[in-house]
Amino acid sequence: MKIMAIADEESSALWNHYNSNRLDDTDLIVSCGDLDPRYLSFLTTVANVPVLYVHGNHDNCYDSIPPDGCICIDDMIYVYEGIRFLGLGGCIPYKDGKYMYTEKQMQRRIRRLSRQLRKYGGFDILVTHASLRGIGDAEDMPHRGYETFFPLLEKYHPAYMLHGHVHKQYDYKLKRERIYQDTTVINAYEKCFIEL
Image: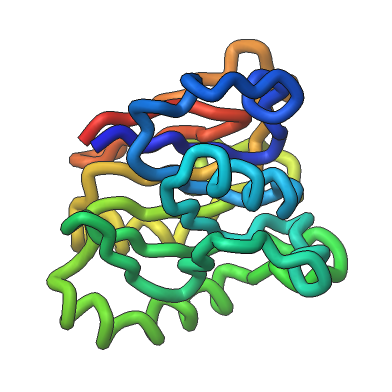
């Protein structure tokens, strides 16, 4: 299965200069947040594949302009072709906002998933907006990652964690891929592909 992960910035090659064969071999699209909902609707239409998404901290507009034809996986496990996706969007609060959660609030969200985690026997891919604290995040408060994701990865050992929130232009040396124990942590900024 080939998955395109996207976040934070719409790809000009996919939206403004779309070519019908650009996504021919893509089986699934996963959005890690902060993208125009019309972009997600466009991608699911032209690629004719499901688009799964979590909310980023700038996605308040989704209430009035939802991404049509796309599937929100925030606070749930969603299974596609046998692959279990766990969605936890949002980021650390740095101002008032709908999709901002303290560490304690994120811990509560994870605790509320315990029944689903037991039912599905864990998950294969964690989809978030914010990263792990100290792994792929930044030092400023708006881009700090969550410590509460570590126990989740340590207990369930997913193959991947996909996140966004930290843009490439913030640091030209920013790595797209990192490893934490058994999990490959990928910053999906703009777009990237993974094969399962």
